[in-house]
Image (cartoon, rainbow, N blue to C red; front, side, top):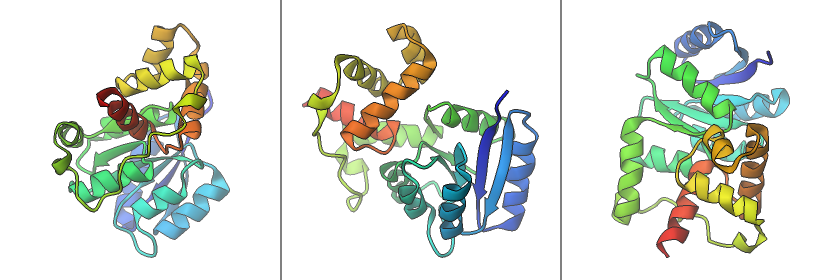
Length: 218
């Protein structure tokens, strides 16, 4: 079985050690590196090509949100932070993070989240999910200084199948669920999702869901 390669980025050595211990205890996960700041995380991710980067937000030299933005297309980023504030939540998702968890997440849930992100799915802490839903119903819920959602261009470039996949992502379905609904292999689903993101200029499936939500309400 091919292992999930993970890079851990956190400026606190004790936190990194704990995360490495948790992830290293999962037989299907291999921690391939550790970074103590955002710049090092970006450099190591480009060199090692991990499947998932477990990224803190507050780090020296380059913060986690900026590092996530730089890693778009290189690796899937799972944010793990102590700070459950809108500025970080929306900033991370706009930057292309595949998931956002708090550091009080238990070990089993953390390992499960890494598996989901490596598979091409997204994961959010329950409190984050509630606020994201609120932002759809009330635009004032999102911080005013956050970037606008991606512009609705390029939809005509999607094939009929890719539009079906976009609709499924917009409904919050995982790759496995999309594969079952559209009767195709999960690997094929992942390829279609990647093509949809590339054609629409989106960084993550969370952004794709926001994009689809905007289309559906227009």
